[in-house]
Image (cartoon, rainbow, N blue to C red; front, side, top):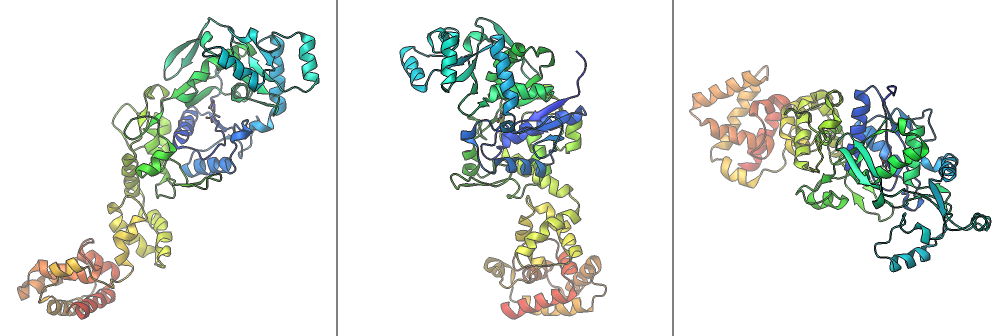
Length: 505
Ligand code: GLU
């Protein structure tokens, strides 16, 4: 078989917000495609109109764009294999349904829901398959003229695949190896419904993967049970030669490892399970998102990449470029990956440290604006550079360093009791004179001048420094004192000290 250009697809159904597990599937497809110089396609699988949710498609595109997962083709991206929305491909599917019927690999079934219910009650563990199909009302049991009469009368029907029993079907999975399932356990799945003139997932998926020249299907393991049926469909269509390779990714598990991660776990345990905040249009519920919670896209990507895959060494921090280099389907785990969201916070902290101060300052600006602070960009950059190692999220910078922007108006009671001594007011009044004389008002020089004044007076260094900190910050926290004085400047430092003396004396 000739080497084909790698083409993968991410094929979500727009039934709600894209779950973080779906994001991981998209990411692995992307890494694989880019590593092989291939193409990544976005196909929207909206054949189940009952489950369609308004806004879901836009959400999926916005979320993946935010994360830097880029598509070469598909809904919203164009391309030569469209349309890429399945609801717009009705006529294409009809042709292929016809083909299967003509070849005898599918048949028309007229059983009503009531008739199926009767059979289910009559036969234990009823399954529509080789063992039961000849007792049902379908084109295998009815005469050609009866079938035609029903069709002429516009009777609703479905088309079912005709699975031949007692055959071992092999799915060659790039993660799991050779997965074998006996065709007798498969049922004659519905491929098409006349009611809405739409195919079901199984048929649409195969036809589209074939027509869109998909070479690798990388998807969640919940689709593994469908894979044998898909292998059979490829064969029934005569497309075995171009059948994509499969890779089924293990589930994401709850943080305690018990069961599949669900959308309820997130808000129960305090972490998002959706990339972006999601407002459920049906229930009105709001689910938190990584973006709105202050995670950086790089951190989310790095975190997700390592949930179910590892590079084979202990490297943890990897950029998208490095991930593209290193990714390897054969290193994906066969068992579920526990969703350790603390690790995601760790990555976020890490990426904030790696980020240049200018960028971090830009991200902090809107947070400042929320607090009515409109500071000079260079000043914000300087503050951020001093303080970012202390935070996990950019927005936490406010809590950590608001005193760089606003003078304290109150003084923490506990700190006052402990740090403001009888002679503090007198000492800080003298300190003001020392500071006023300092020129330049730099970090080292000011520190030296203050320390030699303390020495000459025989004061206790700790006492003066603690009281000064209280005056500058309003409490006992913050970086090195002279980093603060240098940043806020001479006038402001003096103003703050004088005010503290005024209020606390
Ligand atoms: N539409 C399916 C989903 O929502 C796609 C499964 C597949 O990738 O084949 O996950």
